[in-house]
Length: 418
Image (tube, rainbow, N blue to C red; front, side, top):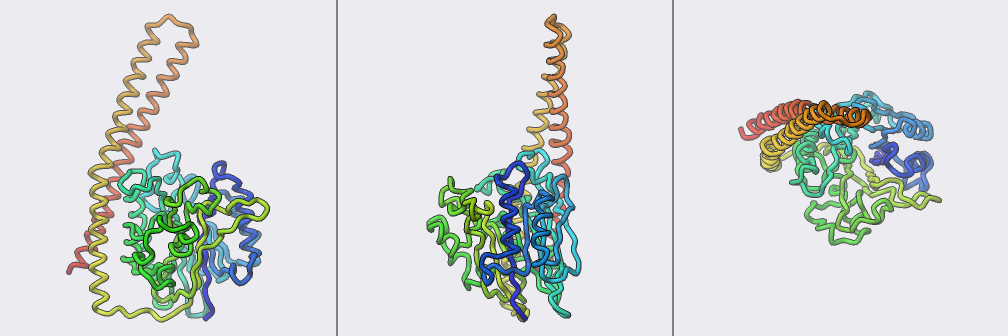
């Protein structure tokens, strides 16, 4: 069978926010439809993330129609949608979208993850009469801090999303079907989300598989040159070779974009792509670099008793870490979030009441009294929204959803430890 060539690309297509959005997205569509190097930039499967403007998708879809006759944009989600799309040279047999039940907080308006309704876009592609490949395209919650202990890192939420993703991987696996997870996992190698998806599903990290090395063999990418970070560490985000990250330091580079494959796919090549600049614009195509692999269908590896024992031991350790992370979040972060939101409500309502009494007793100009009444209304309204919706309502639902995931982990742990 011929090689399967897959590409994952975070388009950075946020309306009104990302610079040169339309120009960059058009350049991406043009490059995909008419590669600058035919042998190097021919892909069979393209997974796109952060494609949040419908006009951008329509341009890419129309431009790439001849090269990729099978295309799917996923609309489901909250206000913005998940921003996921798949282009394919293979016929699409079936598709569906799974929304993550845990995806940040509605109070985090600036980051906006909750309002997109992130999840997993699934497409089963028919390779031939007997073989299929399940493509899972995803974009996990963003880490808005490098410090995993900081609340803005959202490690617990992102790991819960990976838990859902692993269920889909296991569900989609079949004897004559390969599984490929592509996308921006917003997780570094050896992080809890990364370990969970690679160990629970036993998926291969295509970069490490191709290089025939373990993650610890790569070393610390912070001490590498920018080019070495790409060539050795497969860095895709915040590289100083990216014009949108030129003000960052070399130490801030991340590897966040992956193609993870089932054991019946053999990796024949892997590269970081879209490193060059847009001709005539001299800016990078996106704030991430793309990542591509070539693979072929192989035989499913037979797991020996020794490997099975090692796998269960790794799973136990990962599950205990995950369960501990959820418990810590429930005990520390949720009460803190609830208490500060309720406190804001109490203070806001108290100030609103005080202003109302002040207006009643004052003899100032009418416009001053009207202005103070309006301020009182705003304070009271924001206080009730913060306290009742964000503080009491959302955190209660968040706690219960996390508790459900924790019990699911314990169920599997009991089975593994039998």
